[in-house]
Length: 106
Image (cartoon, rainbow, N blue to C red; front, side):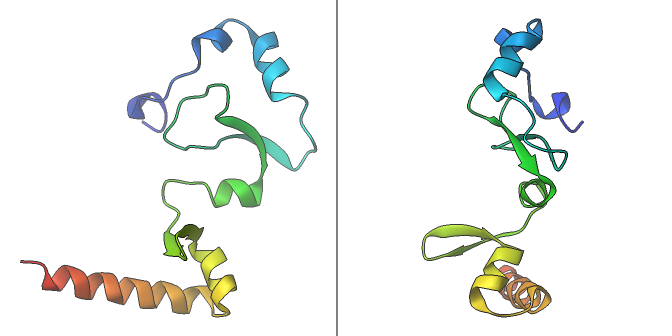
């Protein structure tokens, strides 16, 4: 359900050729890195796979809340840091605003 069920596939060029995959991705930078898809809804394909830290992966999940500030998307945690407020405070402000907007819809 998390991968194939969402239509996420492995690039045909990599399916039977681990050497091609390793050539593209390169060696693991450190024990703190694991494989990650840049676009979480995209395929495991050249240009969409990287070595990422736990923090990068935590910020790159389908459940991650993103907030637009100055035409850029930030994770909730990044936005709170940028704005100088607690993450929980920003979450509650956004959650309340979303609920108010939903209540106003016909």
